[in-house]
Length: 340
Image (cartoon, rainbow, N blue to C red; front, side, top):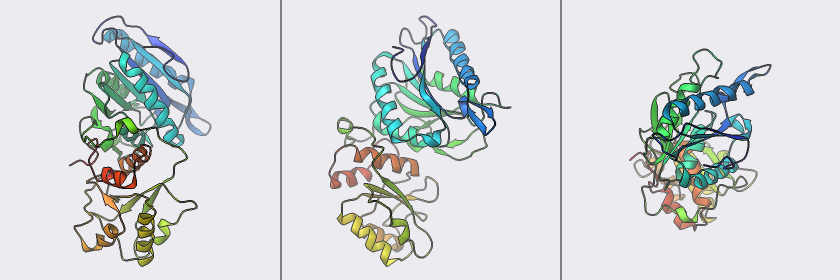
C-alpha cells in the first residue's frame, strides 16, 4: 500500500508478514466523534483524539503482524458536513487501493455514517475485499468510550476476507445498505441486517457510474396529515425525490400533491417511496390509499431505509441512465438494500 493513497497526512504501522501477509489494511480517518475531545464549544476534532486512534492502529498492527496505512482525510470534520463529494472521493480512493490491500476501514462520524456506508455499498458493490465503516458514540477521552473498541473490531473485520461493504459497530457487523442510526446515546447505536452489502442484481450498472454529484439535488419529502403538497415544492427542480410515506405505502388524499407527482413523472423525475416507520416494508399496491402514488409514478423497493433510498437515487442518477432504466433499477434489489 502507498502512503499517497489519498489526501491528507498518511503513515504506516509496520507489523511485518502475518495474517494479511504483505497485503495489509488501509485506514481512512475522516473525523467524527471518534476523533474528538471536549472544547469550549463542545466536542471538536483534536490532535489528542487522532493520536488515540493512531495508537490503536499501531497496537493492532503490531499484535496481528499486519501492515496498516493510517490516512487522515483532511480537514477532519463533523459528519454533518459530509456528503456526495466526499462519497465520490472516498470510493475512488478505496477502489484505487483495493488491488494492494486485504481490506479498508473508514472512520466516520455517526450522524451521517449510514448515508456514507450506503453510498459506498452501491459504488463499491463489486469490491472483492471487506470495506468497513465505523465510528464512535463517545469521544476517545470520554468515560465509557467506544472509539478504540469499534476501531479494533473494524480492523479485524477488514481482515476477515468476506467481500462487501459493512458497518462494524458495538461488536456487530451490519450490511451497509441496510444500516440506520437508531440511537444517539446507546453504544449499540445502529440497526440493520447482519452481513455485508454486495452486488445482488445483474442490472446494477457498475461500469456506468461516474460519481456522486454534490450539485445534483435529490429531494427528501415527507407525507403529512391532510394537505402535503407543500412538501413537493422546492426552490429548484430536483433530479430525484425520496418520498417518506405512511406505514406500508399510503398518503392522504391531496389533489394538488397528486398533480405535482404526475408533473414530476411527466418530467421524468424519479420518485422513490420509503416508509416513515424506520426500514419498514413498502408496497404501494396494497392499500387503496396508495393508488394515487402509483398513478403518479412513485416506485417502491421493499424495506428501504431513508439513507439507502437517498444514496440509491444519487447512485443511479450518476450512471447516465434513462428515466425508464432508473425507475426499473429503483424498484429492484441491487445490493441487498430491500431486505427481502
